[in-house]
Image (cartoon, rainbow, N blue to C red; front, side):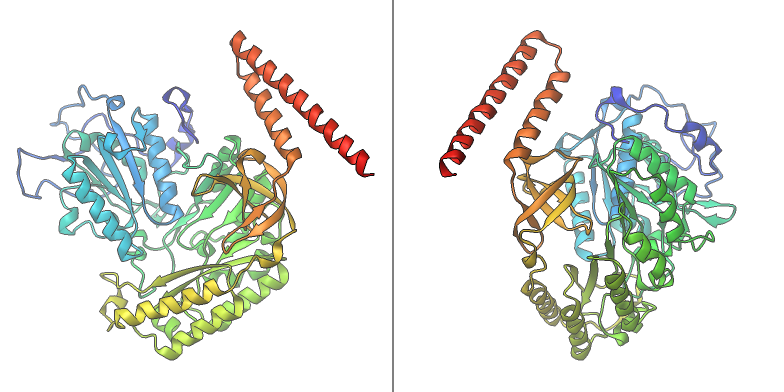
Length: 556
C-alpha cells in the first residue's frame, strides 16, 4: 500500500486475516519482559537480552503501562542496503510505523530515530552500515538495526546495546521503535515457525509505503537450500521458508487494487520456492498470472541454476507470457567447474549453458543477467580464463562483476587468499570485456511497446521497459508514469536505448495533463486560467497545422 498522508492511511489492513494467522502479533500495552531500560549511564551490556521463544508474549505485571507517548511527535528515517528483499522489508516497516502515527522522513538530520537495514553480502556494504551507526551515535540519534548483518552478527561489540529487529520479525518494528525512543533496548531475532516448520516470515498482509508507488516487491520465500562457502546471507536468512501460494496471490491482488503496475517476485533464490511446501515456482507464477491485469507486468527475481533446470520447460512457457517480462537473473559466479565445486554451487558449467541455450531458443529475445565473482581463493589463472571465455560466448547484456570478499564465519574466509592486486586485475579484465560489446547497437529504428514506471537516476527522463526488460529512456514531456506507450529507438548506449520524441505524443500528453488538472480544480479563477490555457493550446495547434499544410502544398 502507498501511504502519502496520515489521513489517507488504509485502516482496514486485513486485520481479520491477520488474527487467524498463527504468526499474528498483537502489540502489548505493557513492556515485554525482555525489554530492559538503560540505567543512568551504565556501560554494561547486561541490560540487553535477546528475545526467547516467540510463544512467550505475556507482559510483566510489575512493569508500568505506557504513559504519555505520542508517536506523531517523532520522525523516522529508514536507510536500506542490499537486495530487493531488504527493500520490501523496509517498505513494510515504514507502512507499519506510518499506520501507527510516526512521520517517515527522507532527511536523516530531521529524524529522531534511524532504522538501518543492513546487507551482509559484501564487505563494503557492511562498512557503510558501520559508518552510518557511528554518524547516528555522533548526532545523538536513536537507532534500530535491521537486515542480515544485525541478524547474523548481533553479538559483535559494535552492535551491543542496540535495538534489533530480526529479518523474520519486521512486524514488531512499532513495538521496538516505541521502546527505543523511551531509552530501552529491544531485540527480536527468532525464526518464525508454524506447526514446527519455518515460514516465510511476518505476514504479507501488512501496510506498506512503496519507494516506487508503481512497483510491488513480494518476497515469496526466505533463506535457501544451498551451502555456498563464500556466502554469509545464509547465516542471517537461514534455511528455506516459503509463503503459501494463497498468501502471495492475495498480496498481489491488494497491490493491483492500489494501482501497482509491476510485480517483482523476489527472494534469496526464487527457483527454490515451495520445495518445503510441496509446490514449486511455476505453480505460483501460473496463479499470479491469472490475477495480473492486462496492463501490468511480472518480473521474476534471481534463481540459482539447479532449481530452474528442474522446471525449464514450464519456465520457458511462463517467460513467454505477455504479462511476464522475458528476463531472468541466473548467477553463474564462475566459468570453472573446479571453482564452482569449491564454492559448493551444486551445478556445473554444462548445466548453466544448457539453461541459457534452452531459454534463448524457446523464449524470443530473452534477457539473461548473471553474476561473476573474481578472485575466489582457489581460482587459478586457468580457471579465470574459463570465466572470460564464458562471458565472451554469451556477451551478457546485464553482468554483475564482484571481487571476492572473505566474509567472517564462512568457509571461504579460512582459505588462503589471492593477492588483492591480482583480484583487482581479474576484475578489470572482466569489466573491460563487458564494456567492449554494445548489446543495443542494432536497435536504432526498432519499435517497442514499453511500460513507463521509473525516473532516471539523473531525473531527466522517464524509464520504460519493453517485454525483455530492456531500459528505454523517454523524454518526460512525452508520457506519464504508469502508462504503456509505443516508442521508436533513436539512439543507444551501453545500458539503455533512447526513445524518439513525437510531436503528436507531446500534444496528447499536454492536453491530458490540462484536463486532468482541470478536473481537480474547484477555484473559479483557476478554472478560468485552465480554460484559457486550453484555448491558447488549441489555437497553437490550428496555427501550426495550417503552416505545415501550406508548406506541404508548396512542395507538392
